[in-house]
Image (tube, rainbow over all chains, first blue to last red; front, side, top):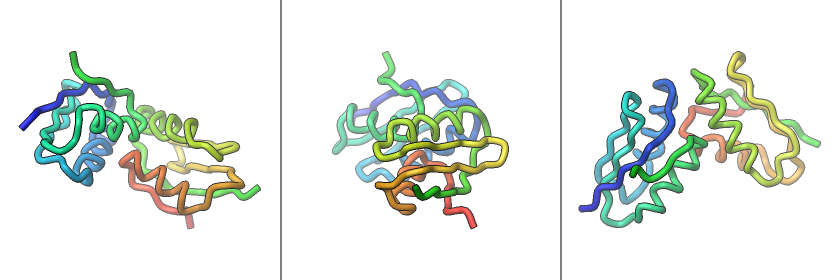
Length: 68
Length: 68
């Protein structure tokens, strides 16, 4: 299953918690990890595209991009 | 124009900045205020309902409800 990685600006546990809540509710996500420490979000999905997941993360209002 | 008030859990300026970015982009919002200090969000709109605005705020992943 593809694993997608994103850089997401999160500055407190409220920020990372918000991203976590959105990914928990997002249908099609099999596994994910949100790291406040590294500012990285990793998402496993076989039904959503890299871009679709990025747009959902951006709906939180956080600055987010696909990780290089 | 109606003014809608919400209680939104925000714990840092990254949190309030995220809510600010979402409301800035939301069509139909004439004015708004996001207060990290009071945990209140105030939105003026004559085209969006109280519930529609609440749902947009909730899409940020923050705990949010209509203020009593």
